[in-house]
Amino acid sequence: MKKNRFLTTLIYLFLGFWALIVLFPFYWMVLTSIKEYGAYNAEYIPKFITLSPTLQNYADAFTTVPLGRYLLNTLWFTVATTALMLVVITLAAFAFARLQFAGKNLVFTLFLALMMIPNELVVITNFTTVTNLELRNTFTGLILPSVTSVFYIYLLRENFAQIPDELYYAAKVDGTSDLRYLRRVMIPICRPTLVTITILKIIECWNSYVWPRLITDDADYYLVSNGIQEIRENGFGRANIPAMMAAVVVISVPLVILFLLFRKQIMAGVARGGTKG
Image (cartoon, rainbow, N blue to C red; front, side, top):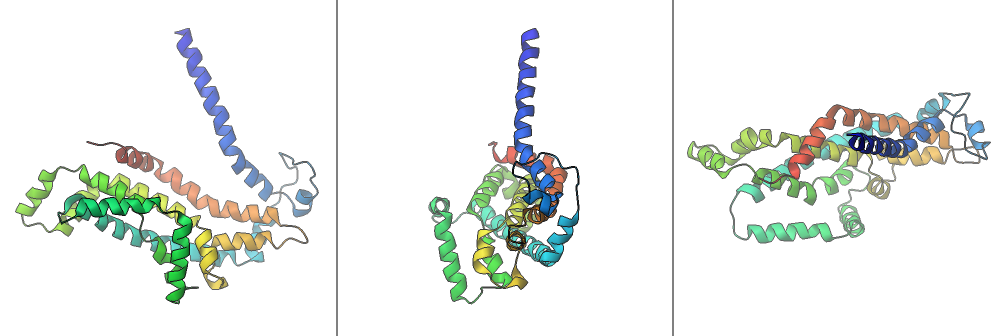
């Protein structure tokens, strides 16, 4: 009994220590965001507390650059990309999981092989394609390369495959169309996985940096990733790190709230995706 208590205490101490390590960057981000610009630059040795907190950095984050407009651009990019991707991957996963056509397994295998291609090569190909289509500095050019995901199709296909075939055959006997069966049976059953995919895609779009920086040089189409870099470069002879950290806090808050609200659904979706049968 004492041995079990000792092991439990040791495990909780280790988890608590690991939690401090994981959460420290967030603490440092918030701390830096409330430090005065001059005081931060005068610190030769970083201080872990501040006795004169200020919210001026948050005001600077919105006045130095049009951060509000960048947030709206990012919101539109995130919502449109996520919505289109859900339609694409749901239809693709349903086709691979339930429909019968010649060469289905071979096509699915080749499709999964796309995951072996480095992202850098995909970025180069997408950039060339979007440039040739004259879609640079447009929301269409920002959104199109991100409307599908091989991994999400695979994850959703595995969930669809767990639904008994008898339900599908019974629905077909009753004259139910494939789309109606997908909408009324498969999607409700696999809702936890769809919620997980939606949240992960929202986080991915919200944090997108390389593609927006590459495909846009017009401020009207900048996302928050572009805005943070502008704030950083606006210091008076030195990088304005406190204002940049304030912007990062503002940008991070929606994602933190989203995770806290849907953490149970995320865990349920991940657990379901890793269970077969």
